[in-house]
Length: 515
Image 1 (cartoon, one colour):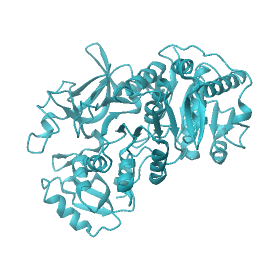
Image 2 (cartoon, helix red, strand yellow):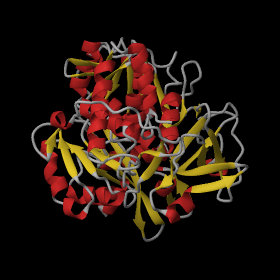
Image 3 (tube, rainbow, N blue to C red):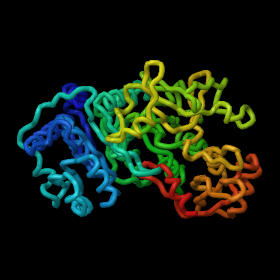
């Protein structure tokens, strides 16, 4: 099994249709497939083959897609790297993965060169002049046939975002990625169709963009529109000009769209499905987006370690505030610290006065064909990550949540983000949801900070809107009037922006570290 066989099947059926559309130029499936074969042959000519790692250090450009599938076609595995990373971050990833080649931009070669002597990198391919060889010159004249791999062989080794420590290499197999690309298309009515035009704003170095936008589209004959850099007005122009039909994005992107001064003028009538993932979607953002554009916004859930999607809301089977139900083939549970399954609530999402969250909230664990093989050379981390029970291998997500009798799941927060103040548990997301309801709040994050009396106390970092008149004290009082006293942020700090990963996750360790 080699997951690029899915693309070969698409080429056989839709060879003359556009596979990738970038800056006005269409590349058909036949043209794309020819290039992946040339890239694979070029790797083979340089001795790169089965199990060898090729690092792709690029933004969302067509060459990323070619290098990805060309490497897999040659039997190798991908190490996707954030193009915002500098030498220090690359040193760990290149050294840990033992990548033999890097594909990057000329401007980024300097960061590779700075650490190259301490890695196994043999050559650097650049999209443009620079490095050892340009991408166009690297392509071979001939094409390599698909190198067969076992379902359990590694196809990609992305690294965790590093928001809580040193990034770990995640071993994702051909079965993991192939199955999840099929699963990820399931929530879309009728699946992904050949006439679909899929917006590629999610970075391809991240598993969400790699699987849900790139692979799911190419497996089903749709057209993929990569976008190298997020810019809300430019992206909306692309949606309107090319009649984009599918959007997958993170909450921060949707928040950017609805926060534009001319947001009410945007035309998203071509969009038939919009999904949010990567982090929790504030209800205010969801409802405002739907109010403005008449497009339902469906929330889902996943992690790098699960390829990524595990849960999603579907058309006709949706509950606002929920991450949805497990995808076909995925099993999930909410368990306590003894791995005992907790009972469901009658119906969610819970209001604060319906039940005590602490009585029904546990850790979400996942089992299925999309769950990673393990962390690369991290036996202790693998020991902590998995529990074997009832004939299944369960992955511990580290996320806290609950589920209801209808099978919908709800995420409360990360285990590592939960705040314990004077013996009471505070889930930051609950406070953040309230902050987003304030008209003067453009963005917000809540963390626990040290407190001599309570052990921890709640602090909110708020990005005010341009025309905000509220003060930090006003925000604090606003929360105190609407939350239990122990939950309200005793400290509120206004900031220009929140530190986020490229996929929109707030790096809360940086906020807490500012203390």
